[in-house]
Image (cartoon, rainbow, N blue to C red):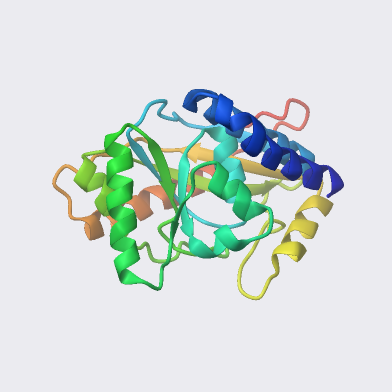
Length: 250
């Protein structure tokens, strides 16, 4: 926990003092490296599966399980997240999220959603890689929550591909789904973090699917198709077997 806290502080100093002198590409590499190191501080192994599209424009669409999801996906590849505005007010984490380019949305204000969709479309047209959690909140991992389709309009407007991504946490000793990083219902963030760092066998699996184009689809029907794709990717990730000595997955 102490190592993770020191790493968070180091990240804030990097954003404040180093980022102004770096190019965008250098910032993205720093964010990816910092995220991978944070996972290491927490004792979590990262495994990336599938083809991660290198260049934008691209919208990543992923399932949402934990506070750990953003760090795991950032460690796999850089992207700009769209997050609820509450995160911007979290101690330390809010500053870090703002510093790496997160787009914040006031979900209770319909007009703000329209603003964010326009901003996302402009960012995609500029060749950026964005990421959203269409469930809107964290789930228990047993089944996906309904997908909200509003933010998919940005990809349709920008004629940008969407890549489905499955996030899955595995318990290394048993190979079963790990519930340690869970963050649902009445669970507190601190309790979830403490449970995660006390478990030495958590493996974070990020599995990328094939990018899809809208091809004339309406956003609601596309959301249903993407939900099905992610469910299939989660099943594939859950069937992966850890090789205990090499740390690789079959």
